Amino acid sequence: MGDCQTVADYLIHANNAAAMWWALAEGHGELLAWTGRVRIVVPSPHHALRAIVLDADSAVEDTIRTVGRSVLARSDVARRVVEDASGKLDLAPHGFQERFRMTVMLREPGRRLAVRSRYRPGPVTVAGEPGELAAAEQIMDAVFPPPRIEPDMLGRTQPVRVLGIEGWQVWLGRRADVPAGAACTFHDGTSLGIYQVATLPEHRGDGVARAIVEAALADHPNVPVTLTSTEQGRPLYEHLGFRTVSEAVWWIPASTQAPSGGDTAARLR
Image (tube, rainbow, N blue to C red; front, side, top):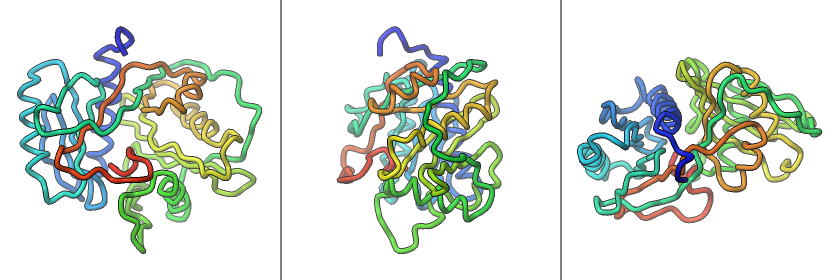
């Protein structure tokens, strides 16, 4: 991404993601490493082991050693991923393979929303009880399917305990009063991260995703907001005031059989 990237900007996303996954892991998962350069957690038995690079500029060799030692050694964990929001690290010589890339985007605080879409699909609410949370989780799992579909998936990717995690919100968007889209956000005290914006196929094209993102932005007007985007999603986010700050790279162990089908990013949750 060249000169559009700054250290401070990609770190906003990296720090938010690290805080979010630790919030989910605390009391229920494992903390494998916590330094100023990398945080490595296993949030739950139903989520991937995640190594989030917080500093890709200093003591790089030490960071790579920490990542390799903690991630490659855990062959007992089916899914393992290294998130480098800077896109700077080359982990290929160290036992990893690149899995995918996504654009890291940032919206500065205090920006006004552009003219709202002419589409008003329906109300957007924050899930406040298990039924609403389950409806949102089912939408996210339908759009971003987990790696294994099992009979009782409810409450695994968005367990009921997230309703009590400070800063964690799950959003449910409707179209004609029918649950149609969802997303989750995490406020780490200094920034808001938006994750897993999903719209069911039969409800796409009517502004559901936009309405959800607008609601989250309106609820957090005074903090920077960060997310990762596909190329298809970028025009929407740019219209809402986001700008590109880096190209993040996700790495997996080179010996890991990559999952086939579905959305790769979701399968590494």
